[in-house]
Amino acid sequence: MWNCTSGRSGEFMLNAVFFVICFGASAVGIISGTGGGVIIKPVLDALDILDIGIINFLSGCTVFSMTAYSVISGKMKGESNVNKKIGFPLAIGAAFGGLIGRWLFSCLSQRCMEKDRLGAIQSLLLFLITLGILVYTVHKEKIKTYRIEHPGISSLIGMSLGMLSSFLGIGGGPVNLMILCFFFSMSSKEAAENSLYIIFFSQAASLISYMATGNIPDFSSGLLILMVIGALSGGIFGRNLNDIIKDKTVDGIFIGLLVVILLINAHNVVKFM
Image (cartoon, rainbow, N blue to C red):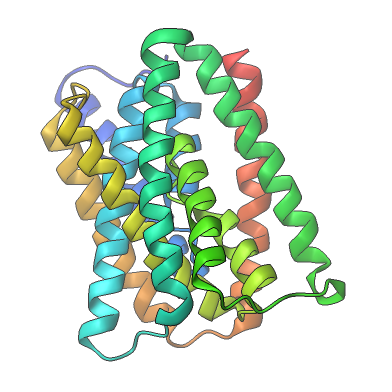
């Protein structure tokens, strides 16, 4: 278990760590379309400060607040590049998938499995998925992409994304970007914005499920508020920065992020085992 100096100074340090993590993750998440949770979740797992169930919930709340800001802000400013014909069926599917993933995590967490083993499974799955996405991203110029327009197929793809992201507690992140580029031939920046739109719906459904079932874990409300403030601040910073960077820069940030995620999750797999 990660420790810091006791007393007020220790509490201040702990709060500062959470704020910086959420700010940085959300700024990068807005630019790359990963949503931030793919950074927040494994980093908090690595620090071993909180129970895995609490981390899943706090990460989901933080990602939801950041993506809500991005989606609403883009809509109000008329700057949204979300392809509604594709994005809406994906988002609706992701919402249902988010409920399934939330149920699966709850079932395994409460009835079937030790927390460390569940954490190891989450970290290993995220490591393998991230590795596959990194290979795809490096070679994507040579890979044929598709342009699916059928709403039923789009909904099924969205459901799969929502289920996976909710179970892992990451919002969606790199998985969304790869799927959007491969199945819908989107550019990096277009995929990033559509990814945040999907994450918004899937996390909203997951959080509603938490409240409806009364399975909200015990946590400090002050810590959640601090994380949300960090996420929103990072989201504002990232959205402003996103307006001036190019697709190639987004690709570079994304690849660097994948490498960092791989290293963190490799550490977490060993730690939980």
